[in-house]
Image (cartoon, rainbow, N blue to C red; front, side):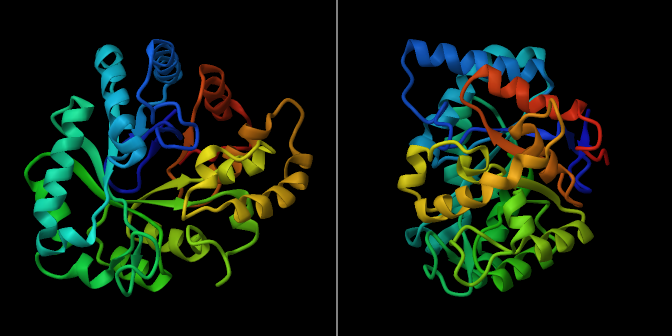
Length: 319
């Protein structure tokens, strides 16, 4: 089963493999046993049709890309795999954003052992003023000539990436300005049943944005939309908070505890035989405009369960 990634011309399995710090599978300097688990989990994903892997230079200080690159080098020949990675810029990069973007990307490609990636995403939040939220860059720096967007397009024109995209965190007006250019092909947004039922307020955590307004805008422009944080850091699965939840500046322990209270009633109405992860992923995939849900996996069994969502009648709308 494949779903279109907006109007990009790409399609993908509706569940993508998240290689970030919540599961922690790939973000470590892996010993032999961990490498075996990494290989088994990714092999299960490939066997179940999952063909999109989302990583970042900052996940595990590069270990996510290195581990993913090693395993895919061993397993990729059997499969058509697409890899997405990200670049996070610092104030020191402001003098020459395009050079910093290309430098970061080439380092990522070395770790991934690939000559190009399908998607490169800006990993910074976007705000009106740089630094007003964690890691945020100013919208003017994104849009100005010789700025961040020009730098992303430069590596695409060089053939190092097929698509460029955003991690949709920051201030709504700044994000709308970036999206409205029509020059980004994809975006990742926190989308889960709680955020769909209870829109964020001004008091919401930094990483929560108004998906109700942003997703339709993205759909109108033909952008591919990835849902991230679909389990609200594990809260919607009634799981303990991950170690990452205790240190992240974007999705805090306080927000996890808030979500956990809501989650105690979330899965009560799911159909017989439908697991809580499947029910939750299915709710995200039914949202108009969402191309795929990015899910972090820690072991092969989790992959099989999530991939099974495509067989559940009424949960997934095929586009």
